[in-house]
Image 1 (tube, rainbow, N blue to C red):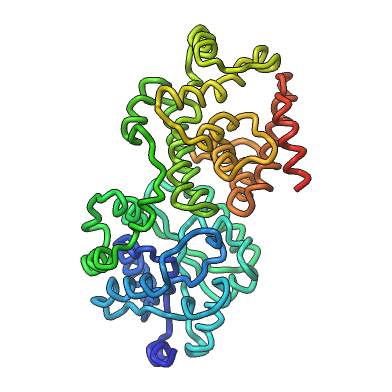
Image 2 (cartoon, one colour):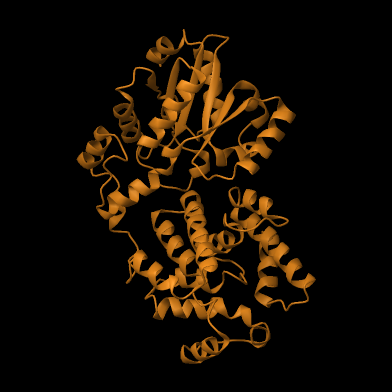
Length: 410
C-alpha cells in the first residue's frame, strides 16, 4: 500500500481498470490505453478483483496468479499501475469500497474514471450503494462494435438526469477478445498467441493454468462444430440465428452462476434446444412414434409443445448427447417445471432473453432479473408467458402452471 500512496498522491486524474483478469488479455490493454489517451489521465490503475460479489459461486484462478499476470502484462507501459487493494481486502469485493479507499490515498481533488463494460451500466443500480458511487467517480462504458447503443444511451441518460453523474461511452474493437475464450482455447490446446501478451502466455504455460478442469470436462460424442453443421441443415436461418443467441446467452449466465462444466453444457443445450422445432408435422409424428416420445392431450392439441420433448430425443439419437441434465434442459425449455436444475433454468431464461429477440413488453425487466436472481427471473418469465398464452386463447400446459406456483412461492 505504501508504494501505491507514493504513485497516486500527485495524480490529478486516475482511470481504474477493474476485472478478474483471468487472464488479462490484449483487449484489456488496448481499452486502458484508449481511455488514458481520450481522458488524458495521469495513470491507469489495473485492479484485479479479490472475491467478486457477482461471481461468488464461480471458480476463479488464485489471486496471486491473476495479480502477477497483470503485472507482467502492464510492465512495459509507464502510465499503467497494478494495485493490490482488492485482492488484499478480505470478504466480497465491491466497487464502492475500492473507490472510497482510493479517495483516501489520492489528493482531495483527484478525478477518478471507472472503466466498465457497457453491460454493467444497465445493472449499476443493483451494485452496493449505487447512488453514492455515482457521485464519487466518472464511469466510462466500453463496448465492442455492434453493441445496442440505443439502450445504453437511454440508460446513461436516465442515470445522468437522476444523479447528475458523468458517464462516458467508448467503442473498443479489441473487446471482441474474452478471458473465457482464452481459458477455453488453452484447455483445448488451441493457440492463444497474440490474444495475450507474450509474458502472460509464458506464465500460463509455466504454471499450467486453465488445465485443472480438463479432467472434469463434459465429453460429448460430437464436437460443437459438427453439431452446428448438422443443425444448420435441420432448421431455418432465422431459427439458427436465434439458436446461436440462446447458446451465447446461456454461456454468459453459466459463467455467473455455474462452473466450467456448466458453461460447456449450456452451450450444447442452447444450440440444440430447438433442434426439432422446424420439423414438418408428418416428420414430427413419425419421429415421436419411432423415438417413443410420450405426448399428452394438451400437447396433441397444441402441437408446438411437442418440439422440446422430441428435441431431447433427437439430441440424444442424432447428436449423440448422453448427458441427462443437457437433455432435460432441452426437454423443459418451453414449459418449464417445478424445481428445475441450474442448467434447465439457464436455458429456459436464455431462450426468452437472447439478444436477437425483437423488443416486447417485459423483455428488459426479464434481462435485468436474469443477472440478479435466476429464480425471480423464472417467476417473472413464467407469469408473462402464461398471460401471453391465455390472451391468445391457446392451451396452457400444466407444467407451466406448476412451475409458476413453485417459483412464486420460493
